[in-house]
Image 1: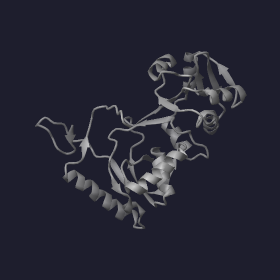
Image 2: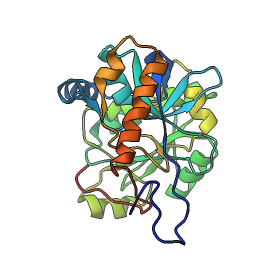
Image 3: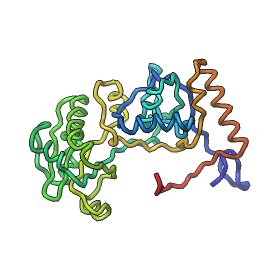
Length: 284
């Protein structure tokens, strides 16, 4: 653990670069995933009470000057709902190999709503082994897949990215709000059942490419929340920017200057730290 910009010993490596923090227009931010309306409402209230933005959303720039929100859709929506003309974001080079795109799986302890989707529509379902489901997802033949203790089934994917996203969104809509959804790394249903105490079903999703995410952000359909997972190095946390800076009608450049001064003050006060270790949080 070392302060950013402060070497430790003569052999210390160069200090890591700081995250690219920018002030951008709210209208430039495009979502690739749905938001959780309840979380957006809670965030909007919390932001107004606290008066600060702690953790900036992560975005990737598009050639036309807009930005795809990779992580932080609820925060972006809460500030949009609050009428903020600008937002603080962390901009990343989306094509850099160290920015990784993965997908979560959904662990359900009550799959009643999911069983209704399996029984009554949402497209043709094909029975398959867990191994065959993984292959079908990787090859794009399945829009999503379901594992239970009794069976495995894959939803045959329609043509086109929009069709595939809409098909899996229909399945997720069948159980969202009816049971708790646990976002987990894809794995064995038996192992997850032991860890969580019970597992009624595991919903698996296909891999997406970064170009898919860029395209989805510009489609009329979005991924359900809790599917895409972006792993971003040098993630900016606890920036704690005063929201009053974002609310004014000042031009972007003026607000950017205030953000830069805020970061500089924290650097000079030895308050910026880079932790290269992987961490596990038990109070998130």
